[in-house]
Image 1 (cartoon, rainbow, N blue to C red):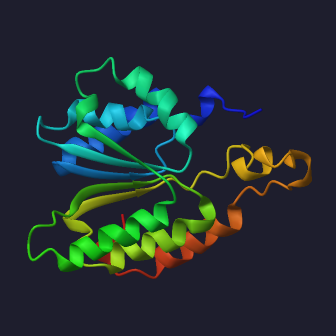
Image 2: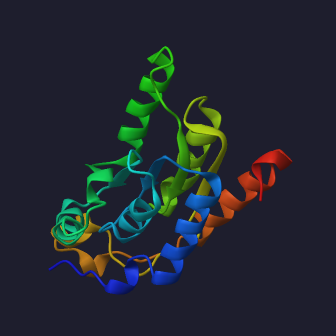
Amino acid sequence: QVKAEASWSASETRCKQLQSLCQACGAERILEIGAFCGVASLALAEVLPEDGEIIALELDRFVVDFGDAIKAKSDHSQKITNIIGQAKHTLDRFIERARDANGAWQPFNMIIVDADKAGMLDYLKLLLETPGMLSDGGVLCLDITPFKGQLFTQYIKAGKADEWMISSGQSYIDNVREYVSMLPPNYQS
């Protein structure tokens, strides 16, 4: 049995904040790492221009499929492309495209990282240290909220839900904060 709770999705307040950021930076191309069922993706799609796009990365096919049924009712859902799988693999492919594109690759104007806390620092480094991933003046948002209590899917599927100690992810969050504090002032806000 897989547990999912509505509180794990983006709240109305969070969606409005993301929409405001999207509009303020004039985003046309958004990367969302850790989209869950796509509540924030759809909210962002609603304020993107008609030719805007969101690339939403999510590990769990179940939550993407669940969200797709709901998002399909919106005229803005065609702006969202879901990629299911490990975000690191997809980012590696994007980095190759950005390096080999000869001007054809378009950087993201806005990137949202709300994925596994253990990988967050690696995602941040890849995105900031790879030319062409984030546009000049682009916005990168990190969700540094500790884990919401969900068990890692592989433990549930293997019948070991009771054997896994859940960490809040705070040590990973602290590492991200330390890295950000060492960035040049033009990266921080």
